Length: 398
View 1 (cartoon, helix red, strand yellow):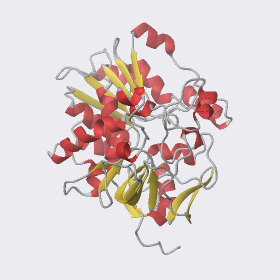
View 2 (cartoon, helix red, strand yellow):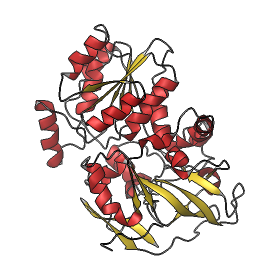
View 3 (cartoon, helix red, strand yellow):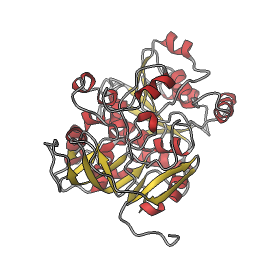
View 4 (spheres, helix red, strand yellow):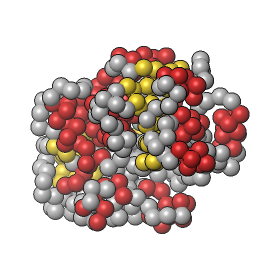
């Protein structure tokens, strides 16, 4: 089969690799009909997530058709159309039983590696996201093995198009959980979202669905800000104004009641802090550039929530913890408990409350993935979200 392969820092390619096979009785094989490039994948491309190996198959946003099941799979059958959460959950451990699916105890065979790096207990495994998170082959491929299939396959029985349900695998639940973590008081609270990429777009619209009185989106890319404005949000271009001053002025001096950092470890920005972050990250003296997180903390109103769906990779420097403490801020963060949200968010799609395909800017063949990774990373050609067809024809270059 064809798959998108990590070939080294800043280099991905499309190669022919062996088809996956059933390894455990609870596995299934899915023929992928749609897959996407996620902002989190760029951290792999740029070399900021350790333990990647040449030949690793990328991708964690995918859906498709079940073509083979193991003898212990009970809830699915060959021919079912499924979306697959990006994180892998067993369904039986204490964390899964409590709905904390991303913290699953049984799906990361390399948990000791993660624990050695972070000095803490590891979460569950992830598709296509380094050996730190289990070394599972990803879904930017024509076929993928899905372990714990009864937990990892959500059947889609409606006539919704792939593009309408594909993002249930990650970015829609991630944005929704980020907004839900704010405990928004409907009709009262102001929510600021740092980052107008795909997760930021879904976080903003989710905050609206949860009743936020106002939503303010902060970014620097005109087409991303324009897309946010289409949903009725206010926007701030941080290259044109002082973000903290602007947010105070827009909120009567209080600051937003809650802030969402939908950027993560490769935040852009300007000023001494951003320059220091960039230099230290390039020298591997720190894992993360935290400009967006600093702005979020400094702009948030007292007693508010800092919700962090953006990925962070390790130790950070120059974090204004004193300001966070003085304000009494609440921090909510972590990998999304995707399994918890798929059914209720699918119902919202079916009712017409939202069509997640609004975020797609580029559609292409899997063969075009290397070029589209670069386009997405560098925000060229108005790129906001890329969806790939694993069965599309090769480009002329192939």
